[in-house]
Image 1 (tube, one colour):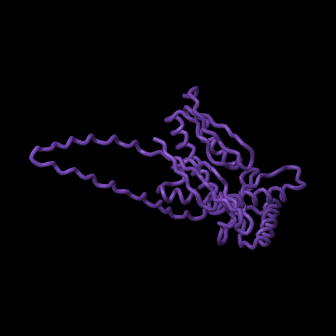
Image 2 (cartoon, one colour; image 1 turned 30 degrees about the vertical axis):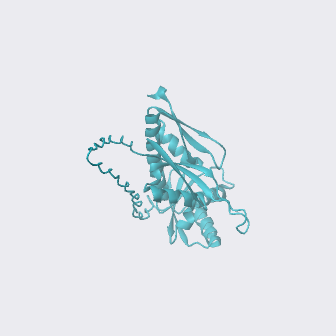
Image 3 (cartoon, one colour; image 1 turned 45 degrees about the vertical axis):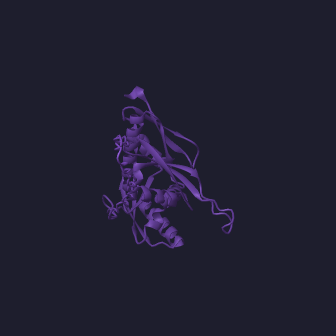
Length: 263
């Protein structure tokens, strides 16, 4: 059966983390709905906490066993049975998964004019950002794969890869400016792209299973265009479901819909 709980905190991420810790679940085990977005206000005045709703699947509760009637003797009343208070068990804390080691770039490093332009632009960009990172460039057809290496790569990845996406976009604009033949540039750090794609595929399959089981649509949290594409691709051949996107950027969401015509 589906259950849900609501949690509040300063930000949406803190509220989600608070809920996952309380439920003892992973991010892929729940469906998140942002009820209220947190606002910091001015100097703390007028601040509004974020509020989220976490929906999860819980085992069906067994029906209570019937209590046998108490037989009283005429000579003396039988003592009343006392019910012991049910024990409340706290959910187990989420398991800490070991952080994977950064993957080495695949293929031979290239040193053509495009790779040189990528290295030059990103080196200057990282100096302005105050981040020490070294771009390693390989090539796969018209796509240049850039792996960033250095300390504290989390600052370059950002929340759900937002900073990494921005670096990728800016690099593409700078390198392709004035070129007649456009090249694609893919930027990654510490294997984040592969880990995020794997997580999205698990989320897609788990959500699709719930949609088919309960025969109702489920709307996922807001994602960028790349992440929505991963969800659509993962479920394009899944029996009983179809997907579509709704809303406007940056709050555009993917809907996993029950589709009996695909059964």
